[in-house]
Length: 259
Image (cartoon, rainbow, N blue to C red; front, side, top):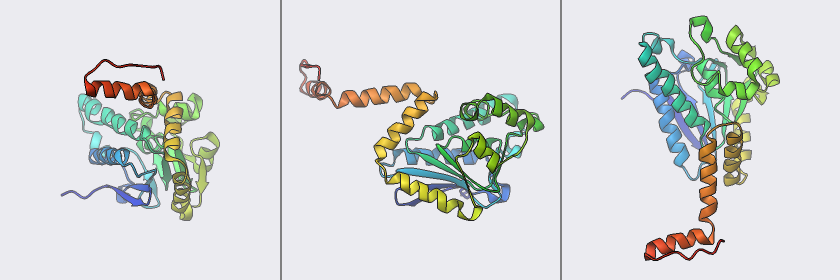
């Protein structure tokens, strides 16, 4: 059995998901995308879980993006089907996770690694971390929402600066632009991320999750599903909602009262 390259552990009501390919700077492979998808499904379904921390192994990199050796030989249609679309599916799943997600960016976040980091709701960077979209330098383009989700986060002008220049920006510059929310000493990054996760986990979990969904919807992230889910939940709490279920089970016409 192949060794897992994405680990997941629990600390009470907080889950810690770690990209565990430090020797390759946590660069992403198709197998890792599959693992991220599987873990997200488990987290989404866990009624006791309140907050998720996403990080990378080692101190050099959070994730330096897609492993070029995994996609460089792909034919165009396979590049579309097996790589770009697949990454979008997995990253969208993380962006829409029910629980709040904190990215503890323990090192460089380049390309797809930056795109993965911005699926999180809150980002805390180690002081030595750097951020970049270097795709144009290797003849490709941002493929996992670097040209979409990033624009909503930092604006078109700054997204263009990153994507068109390929410039590496520091954690301090990322903080100034709104790309990250906090910068922490490398030695205390994990501790700070867990401290914030525990503070959030102590709050009303349904309120946190609903608030996340509302803000996501306001930014265009899964707005239709959010509205329908909340409308359905509200309708289910009404007297008419209960009457509808009773009448169905009793095989009779419902008597709705508008409450």
